Length: 149
Image (cartoon, rainbow, N blue to C red):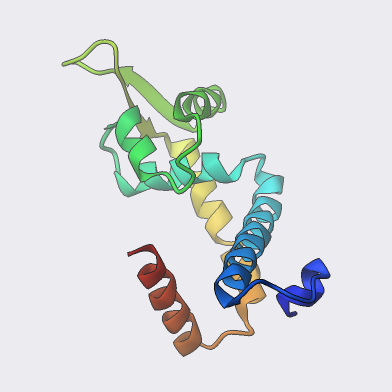
C-alpha cells in the first residue's frame, strides 16, 4: 500500500521527505513483524540480535563492548540485555582474565537451541516480502546500502 494511504497524508515536501517517512514507517513495520515472530519465544528483537551475534561466535566468548558494536539497535543497553539472557540461561558470562572489570559472553546450548527453533519460523516471516522478486530485493538492498554510504 502506498505510504500516502498508510499514514493518510496526501502531500510531502518532496521525494526525499517522502522517502524518509516511508523508510521510517517501513522499518517500524518490519520491527513489528519480527517482534510478533519472537513473542512466542519470549524474546525481544534486541535479545534475539544478541543471541544471533553470539551464535556467530561459535563457542568463543566475546566482550560486551564487541556485542554492542555489532548490534542493529545501537541504543540498546547491552548489559541489561545480557543480564536477562543470563537469567534465562541462554548465555554464559565469565570475567575477562585480562580486565576483571569486563565480562565475556558466549551462547549456551539452550540459547543455541532457541535460535535454531526461531529460525524454523523464518519462512512465515519471509512470506511478508513475497511482493518483491529476488532481483527487486537485491536492488533495494543495494539502494539502502548506497543511502548509508
